[in-house]
Length: 452
Ligand code: GCO
Image (cartoon, rainbow, N blue to C red; front, top):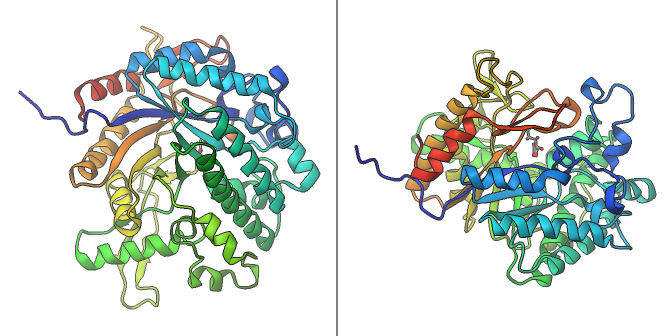
């Protein structure tokens, strides 16, 4: 049978990681401490007392890892720079060894036909900034982030074109400063957390401006796990209701970035806890972006609800819905279709990338008979998800690439090493890498340009 392609030739097939989760080498070559190096010492906060001292040893083994990417046929790699490798204190003196390390990584990627997509902040704040100025509670933190972005834009000209300043605002603010589950592990009041959120948005905007002025060729987009909506059935009233829900349920981050304002419904809901901001802040926050990066793990089913003031109703999930992802996200393959399509219809981004999507499987392990890792559930989930993504591409939604979370198994934050998300299995005793069944499946998808 002659089966046609579903994804264009230039579609970027990538995978993603984050510095603290994979690198190890927390104090090597002049790196400063991050908030994680302090947080992980607190008794009981990390499952199994895990820490990032070695993780997937990517700092030392990036060449081997990039060779595996090439073998799979991956053409993109989304990863993050550890701010404290570049500015050990978060500001001031630059650590040239850190800059040089990431230059070597980028050069190796390019030599192997893999396009780097760099995140500047994936939750590993330089510890000095937390200690000296209170981290993201301080507006100055956004200013220092802008300086870091400027340096990266300048130094990586010709090596990196695509950047995401901040990965996932909700975790960086609420989970880190409100729930205290990730570093720095604080439990601040709602009002203070909302101000942290605003400062992170400001950092995003200042970072976008700095990257673009340092390198006019830079393309900047967010990497955001928005609240994605799936109309319960495909009829105009439900689709419109889902779009309204999309704007309003993302008023705290995405809508602010893409529309340059906090919607009244958000400010009213927060009341006296609403963030303090200026018109000038909102201009910075809404610096035009080149792409929308969506960390898309799930979608909420929505129906038109004329009986409600907001006009929509979001269905509760229940015990029959399969869970995936670390936070028990509900598995909803059609969110790859509706998530991208509605995002495009509401905000018209020039390009969309799935900057994350993946499946946790604690049971991944080498088969005792042949040593292969048969992650069949991941393959199944990928097949269902990519079928829906292909629909979006073929309906004209400008989805330009898909970055799987993750390239390899890694340190799943406070959940430790047991949750495994990678295409590549890591033996944490020997650091042996074993591409899983999903990597083999992906190789076929990339070769044939269609869901296999
Ligand atoms: C995320 C995180 C990743 C997680 C992944 C799996 O951006 O949520 O960026 O670091 O590891 O989502 O839970």
